[in-house]
Amino acid sequence: MQFAPALRQGLIDLVELLGLRDEDPQHGEAGHAALVDAVVSGDGEAADRILQTELDETLAQPPGR
View 1 (cartoon, rainbow, N blue to C red):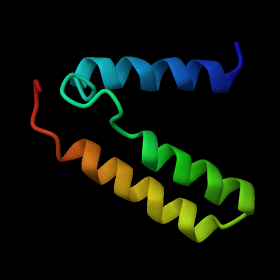
View 2: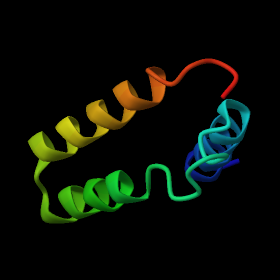
View 3: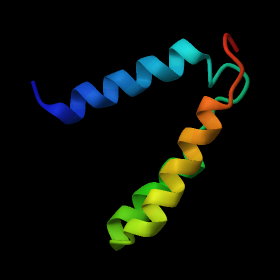
């Protein structure tokens, strides 16, 4: 098993478990696009900032949304 597909499925399962897209079907789309852009451009500092913001916002969601 490769890591990337397993990680992708784990993240999909987490988003579904937390109900992050129940109210906002586009939850995380802008952040993920910005993260990809930062990685492609080689800007590690921006990628780190974007990822930390996304994680903080996700963890701040109330349980059982």
